[in-house]
Image 1 (cartoon, protein in one colour):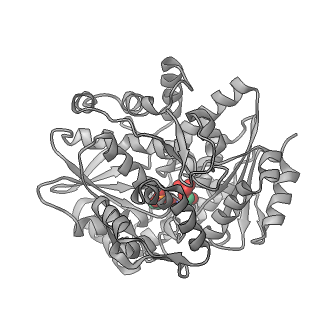
Image 2 (spheres, rainbow, N blue to C red):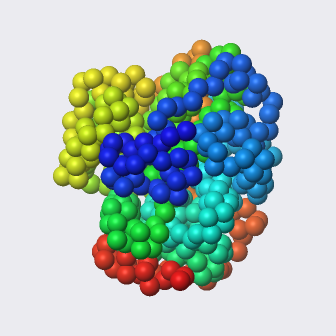
Length: 462
Ligand SMILES: Cc1ncc(COP(=O)(O)O)c(C=O)c1O
Ligand SMILES: N[C@@H](CCOP(=O)(O)O)C(=O)O
């Protein structure tokens, strides 16, 4: 299995190197040169399997000889052992034909744990084999950072630095990042928004002296392994509702486009997905683009679903690569235009995108009303991101096809918005009950690339 860059000018890599490299050296993102297909019978045979065995069968074709089968099975087993639900990703019914895929039973209560727990195990195995160490830098709007810190805290062969937008994450998210005491993890509160954090991260990757000097690695969805791990729950949930014998649809609360891109990969692997619906909050650049208005940045407006307050949606580049016939030079040009404000999408590429994705948005009021309405109708308490998904899903439902909305975080991560909507205060699970009492350790920093690099250089173990 070979991985190629979306900008066409970086070396092709195998799975292990793509995972440890993060961003391609031409600034692009790695994607598989070819997406392996699963046949009808192979998909049907997933029925009744454990989440772990499904994960093994879905991901195995992508990893080449990076891990033996026994090693990979053991890695998967360790990754999901700490989840708080036997099914790992259970489905609950909200209404006839509408299901919620609960992706918040991992250690940090968000869907990021599915990939991050696995990557933590894969990094450890690969680095131990190589006798190497890396510096992980991550950008977060709240959930990636907490999941990464949880997955890598205390490990001897990695230092972790997480850039988060100061004042723009929930208190639970912040405390999940700032309370771990292990000296190899560092939370940096940046005076900026998530897009500033992500731009700084990409600039670090594009500064080869810094990148090579600190052995930079990434665990954002820049990293193909993140996307791959998220493909699994599309298969597990669709099969439990009757795929491949009947199609299903998915609605995905979307910000950086990683989760929905995983659904797109599942479809390309052969999973019969009818509609793939992008659901955005008021920061709706993706919905506007998919409605034919081009991809043009505006101002990010802080919302009650802060993890999706994103304008520069990293993984959109991966789907643009396919939409433009895998022409890396065109993608590189569009990404250059994006730095200056945005770009228009050609008619052919737009046809491709609209063929693959539907889209919708939820305002703040609609999100609050959906939390209250869903609780009253089904008893399910949604986080604001999941509520954005449920609202948009209801607009795109075909009564003949089951709709699965991804519930991407636990409501207890966003208690203020949930309480405002429903008058219910969602409690943290008992293992986190003392989160508010733990001391915080955070470094406030300006939106200054030089200062961030200095901090990182000064705090890596040598
Ligand atoms: C809770 C939650 N929901 C949805 C999203 C959007 O996911 P993606 O960035 O993969 O589109 C995120 C962050 O990315 C998130 O943290
Ligand atoms: N919502 C995310 C933003 C980063 O996305 P990623 O999937 O690229 O890591 C977050 O919670 O940090």
